[in-house]
Image (tube, rainbow, N blue to C red; front, side, top):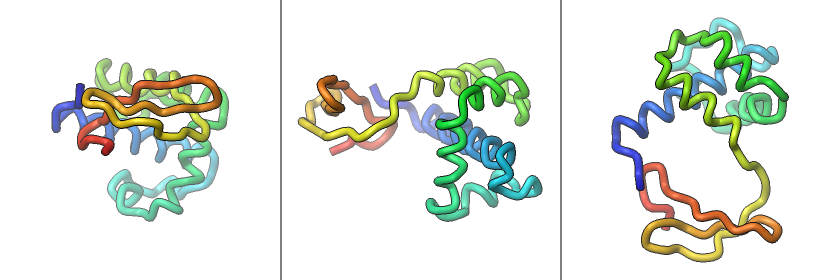
Length: 119
């Protein structure tokens, strides 16, 4: 099941906010950077913030606990859900009608697209 357009943009808003928070917490970004400035920055500029979010233990919990963007409970639940991420090298094995099969080591995952089909 793909997200509705509203759900998709809500997901992106939460993720970008979390990346900005992690980048600021680790001193990788200016504390004066706005969310709009961060959104418009290059992918290369976002990578260190992404690594901080996912590599530093407790960063997601810290974001949820501090709620720096005054998110609703629903948006905080989306943020907390990021704790279940799986990071690594994946191989796309097959595109199916409902999902795409990703393989990492000896584990297969059925991955759903957020908005546009992965194919």
